[in-house]
Image (cartoon, rainbow, N blue to C red; front, side):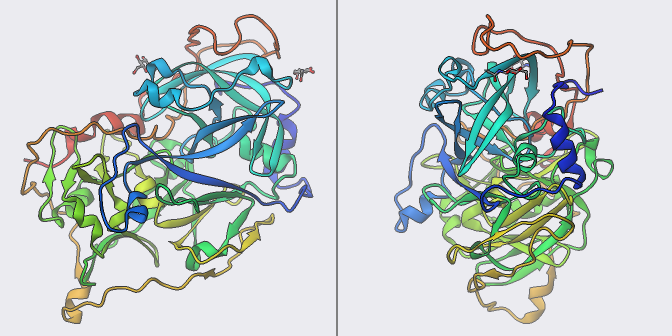
Length: 507
Ligand SMILES: *[C@@H]1O[C@H](CO)[C@@H](O)[C@H](O)[C@H]1NC(C)=O
Ligand SMILES: *[C@@H]1O[C@H](CO)[C@@H](O)[C@H](O)[C@H]1NC(C)=O
């Protein structure tokens, strides 16, 4: 069924770990922390504003990167951290990246210089929301933070398009079962962490505090309780993919004066994707948010909603409700500065086709502290903050993620100047609206992150048993050798990135 099965004894321990029956005693303390930093898009330009360091953090942040080491001796590499895809691979083809010089500015992996490199003959193509990569798999030693993983299957690109950095994939297997043990599986099966869980704390550009913590949480990075939300099953998810899906039950706005509005109850499946620069929501919700920026202009060509950049300086937030938990995304986090002059709302309409996949990307995740617990299929969310560092291990079993309260205190909220009735005003997310103003300028080029991997549902025949072929000719990184296996078939998430604008505002 699955396009790629690596026949390997390595599969066994991962399966055992997944079933929760293998007692695992972690090496070390079972917590692996690695910084995750936003890096600027290809043409970073900072606006001159007073609090420029903090402000710069929101600007042009197009991808979140982790530094890892690959091979023996170790070679340092920078990869995009992606909760929207499971595969980890290196060496994008810079000549066909969106901006080759940007791609070329990052170090590359030279497998010839690694004694632990062990290639297989398995080649596969992964299609992302933006771009694709044809990779050859190999076993390698991978170091993330303090943890060294042996015999990790990684891909080395033979050919890629529109992707500037390799990818560290930490999503669940999109088809429900993995083709091979992914990084998170191997960390658990090799006893580096106690269960397949990690927490993610994305920050803005130039803020060194962002981190991914495998096997742990940092209670110094959020406010209040972590709300435990069940991950939707593939059957409950649009398109049937196994992703970090949760149910969004309401949206709202908190205006600069503190006045709050909230929608009626909604039931929208959304998945959390660190590889998506912006978020994709139903058109009616996008329109309701957009219309609240009265000076904004809708660009029918790109689908973006332009807002004056100084809106990001205002207090106020766009609010997301998951049952009783609210994550309030400050305007400065959700408004995305694409260049010197232009800022856009970090949300696009995402309804495309029958299986629209809605995404909460970086424009949401910057405001959230999120714990991804694959073993128990839960996502835990809290409002992000920063009041120090206090790491707590995630154990194993049903209550592996500690219910520890965040040590940070609530941010001061603006006091509503209007009467209390207006605070309960309803945000109508059912109305069809037309944009008040249309953008007529020259739209800047935007460089978005790769977005999620399309789920691979095709299996075009047999590939034979993959064999380790270290040192064989035609190794990875050589000429293109498209395999044509496992290529995605039509899927909402892919279309969402190419055709979003078609369904936006109704004129
Ligand atoms: C990969 O992307 C390139 C450029 O957009 C495209 O020409 C090619 O058909 C894509 N390959 C697959 C397998 O989707
Ligand atoms: C490569 O993998 C094969 C099969 O798993 C194994 O027999 C061989 O020892 C490995 N070689 C190296 C250099 O790790």
